[in-house]
Image 1 (spheres, rainbow, N blue to C red):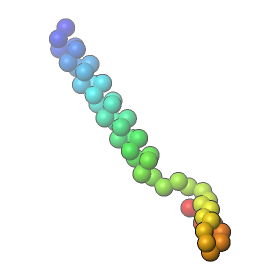
Image 2 (cartoon, rainbow, N blue to C red; image 1 turned 180 degrees about the horizontal axis):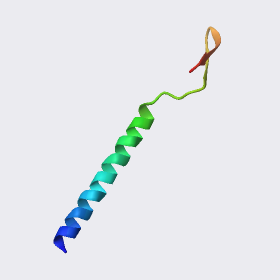
Image 3 (tube, rainbow, N blue to C red; image 1 turned 90 degrees about the horizontal axis):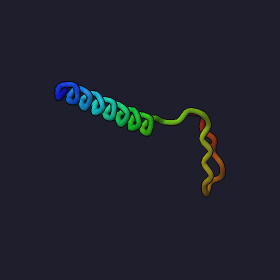
Image 4 (tube, rainbow, N blue to C red; image 1 turned 135 degrees about the horizontal axis):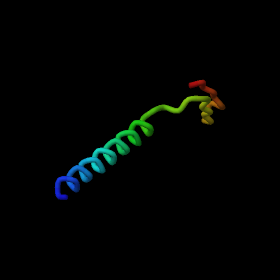
Length: 48
């Protein structure tokens, strides 16, 4: 019984670390599409 609980705890920890890593990866990626910038020199459009 104790061995099964240990295996379950390790599996849950691995899933949590994987989910956190994927979230950090998604946040660091630059979005695709069009970026509009409005500033003192007017409007600029960049395609990403």
